[in-house]
Length: 71
Image 1 (tube, rainbow, N blue to C red):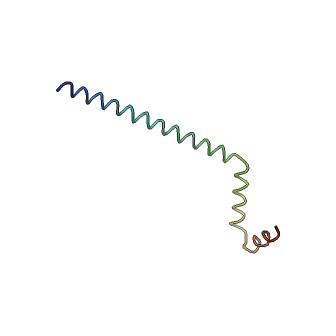
Image 2: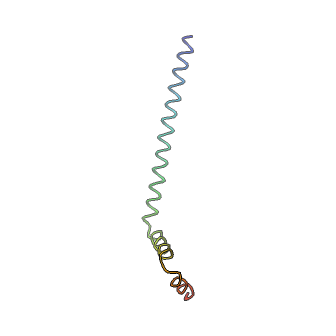
């Protein structure tokens, strides 16, 4: 009986440590992905693409059609 109680206690401790480690690894992974996205957003090419999309969305249809036809 004592052996079972000790086994359950040790197993519970191991599972708890595993879950803590897994949560930390997941947090580190998410932070790395956020940092990578921030680095990509710092790149000017993404900013210029975003500006082009904003122009397409906000311009009049006639103006946009004329610019496309001019190309």
